[in-house]
Amino acid sequence: MMDSLHHNVIDFEWIKTPSGHEYLDSLIQNGKRRHFGLLERPSLPPHKDVDCLNFKIVLTGKSGVGKSAAIAKLAGFKILKQSYENVGIETTMVYWPVRLTASGQILFLRLHFWDVGEGAIKKFDNILPAFKSEVDCVLFTFSFTDQLSFRELNQRLNSFLDEGDKDPVRILLGTKADQYINSDISEPEITNFSQARNVPVLRIKSVPSSRNYSNGRESIILMEQSATSSASKKEETCEKYESLLACVEKFLKSLRDKPGSCKKFAKAFPKCYKECREILQSISDQMWEACETNQKAHIMALIEEIDLKQSLCKIANAELDENPTWRPSGNPQEDIKPWIYKAREGKIVELEKLVEEAESENHILRDKLQSKKEHINSLMEKIEGAVTDWEQMNDVCESKKEMLAAAQDQMMDLTT
Image (cartoon, rainbow, N blue to C red; front, side, top):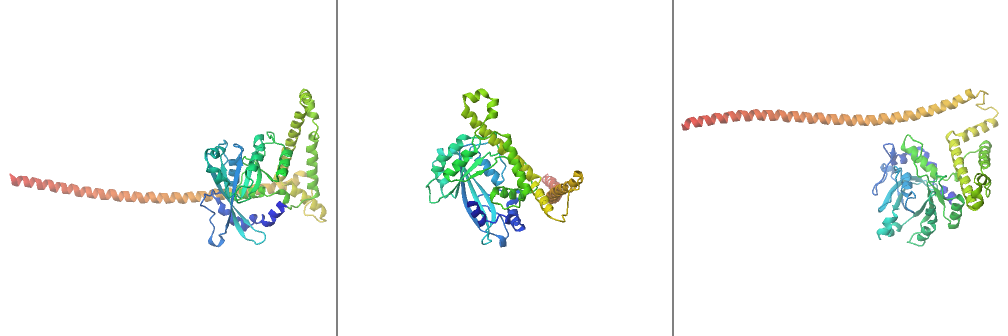
C-alpha cells in the first residue's frame, strides 16, 4: 500500500525525460555531483525556478556502522576508507527534483541529513535536543556485520517515540549489505523485527560502485532508479524470462541443504555436530542463505548487464510474429555479429562523449592560458615603460648633478 501511494504521488519516469534532465543539470558541476552548503541551492533560470520542500533526516545508530558512508554515497561524496566518529553534528544537503503526478508541479526536495557522534551526545547536553528537534524522518542505522548494532535498534526506536511535536517516519537502514559472508544477522531476524515494529527496511552497500559513468547525470539517475522499489515497477516480461528465473531459483536451491537440515555440515564436521547440533544448524542455515542470496545477486547483475531479459522477450515476440525481422541463421558466429557491432557502437559513443568533455576542458584551459599570457604581456609592457621612465629620470638626475657640481665650482671660485 505504501509503495503504491508513493508512486501515485511522484512521477518517477519524468526524471528520465529531457525536461527532467534540465533540472538534473543544476545538480552537476564539472561532470560531478555538486556539493551544496547550508545557504546554497540549485541555480535555475528565473522562469524555471521552483519551490523547495524541506525534510530533516537524522541518522542514529552504533558508532562505526557506516552512517557517514551512507550519507556520502547518497550525496555523491567520496567515501573514506577509514571510519571516524563525528566530534559534533555533521549536516549534508541533498537536492532532488520531482514532479507531482496529480498536478504536474515540479519541486525540489531538500533533504537535510544530520549525523552526530555518540561521544558528542554524551559530552554536550545541547546536541541531543537540537538533533531530535523538528525531525521528519529517522533512519535507524545498523550494520549487517555488527550484531550488537541490530540489538540496539529496539532501544533506539523507543527513544524516538512520543518526542517533539512531530511524528517522524521511522525506517531501518542496513549498511554493508553486500558483505554476505561476514553477515551476523539473518534475513528471518530482520523480517521478524520489521514486522513486529512495523518499520520498513532499506539496504545500502557502503562501498563505491565498480561501474564508472561518463557524466554526473547518469550516476544520479542510476541512484534514483536503485532507490525506487523494483517490486512496484511494471516492466515488460515474458515466459522465457520467467522460466529463466525459475531455473535460477531451482539451481540455487539444489546447491544447499534443505532448511532445518545440515547434512553437508554434519558430514564435514561430525564431532561438532554431535556436541553442538543447534549452533551448527544455525550456522548452516545462515551460510546457505547468504550464499544463495549472494549468488542470485551476481546472476541477476549479469543478466542485467548483458540485457538478457530484453533479448529473451524479443525472441518470444519473434516466435509469435509470422514475418519476423530476424531469425537465427544456424551459425552462432554470424548471429552474434550484430550484437558485437551494437556493443562496439555503444562503446564508441561513450568514448566520443569522453573526448568531447576532454576537448571542452582543454578549450577552457586554453582560454585561461591565453588570458594569463595577455595579462603577463600587459605587465611586461608596464614594466618596460617603468624602466624607460626610470632611465629618463636617471639621465635627468645625472645632468642635474653635473650642473650642481659646476655651480659649486663657480661658487668656490668666487669665494677665493
